[in-house]
Length: 190
Image (cartoon, helix red, strand yellow):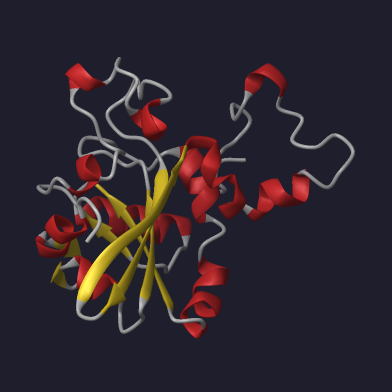
């Protein structure tokens, strides 16, 4: 079993209907994609960039399920905050809280104050600078075990954003220059 998958399998997430384990997130499928959504325990709203990515999730879940893949977002905010924000944004993908567990720390997307200036995020390539960062992790079940098979962080998750894929087709491309994602808003704030 890959590092962290065994411990995560025992950890309890808070879901909309109560406690869930990593195994529960598979929802009958053999494979699972987890999006690590930046929404910390004290945040009032989810990260605007993660929200930009999340706008791409709903239409794809049914197609993923048809190929034996389940999808869930995981954040450290309390489930009540996640549910309120999910309702505001009109999303219906599965979203659970890892608050009170080490799941986000185990998968390299949550950091203590002491870690925030160390080059430990994105496989040690940059400092996180903030308590929570974005990423995605993939898990698979085989022979009764859960395996962590893949993770990507930072710009490594761009493929999950179809709006970026469309922008990459037009003459100006993303047209972000030095501004990076400063143009991004939650879809109800444009």
